[in-house]
Image (spheres, rainbow, N blue to C red):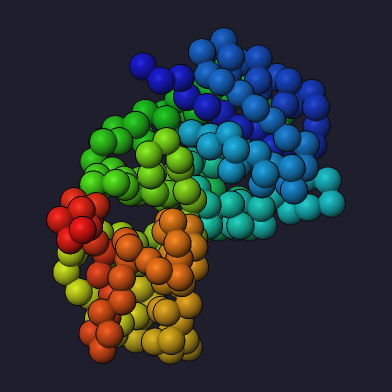
Length: 234
């Protein structure tokens, strides 16, 4: 059974140490950061299953950090804060937080909340994977797994790849992608689809200029080609 990874983001070393000690007693793997900038780098390399985040980081707003982090991860985020105002709690939960614990806190209560969130996201974990020849989409981490490499995508990139994957080896029109992902009321236009497809190709294609996975069907749209189909064509 894999051990869960907990990431702690707090500018108070004592808080980081306390949370780490209690997490490791539960058999979790921990890593921590004292600043938002360092934490964003750690997010990509550590790939946490859950994040414990301070609302007030030094020179930074933890809620803003949470909102930016949601581009790269769907891991539960449990806020820690000395702020008890309802508007702060509402903002934290509205911008990507999953729970809110006020300081001073009970380590036992915090651990109970952490384990509850981990149980929730672990349930049906396999159902959150879409496996295709040569790549696997991970809906929980909002990433694509290719071999031993995990590539994190933006929300729009993942949405594009997800819909193409659900229609693998079939052409999907640009209008369909735009309406499904951006919506009819978007201020963008359909040209933004090509921009995001280009960015996506840079992440998953060996040669983005000559793509073999996401191919353009001129005058029609785009198609995600499964590796088995690629091999059949060669």
